Image (cartoon, rainbow, N blue to C red; front, side):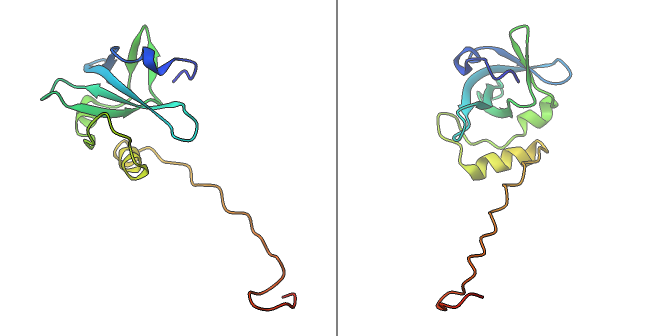
Length: 124
């Protein structure tokens, strides 16, 4: 998705699935804790006034509407964490798995061979 869009301007926009079927209206936008970039949209589906979380990447904003590359059924079956609260890393992971999106593995920790064993003053 375009990263230069103010997330506040997404709220109230219509959202459509990959087939062009209307899903609902964007209620809230959730930002990545580390980068501050828009990461998730909560879409009011109209089904019992429930909000479904959808990833903003790889979604597109086209002609003022959000187009999500997933089927409406998959979106409506997304885990429900309620809106207005912070998404925990575990909840985000559940959502990524639900949508079949792979998270990049964290970079490996640097190999730090200091040449000494714990409790031993001699180099290894």
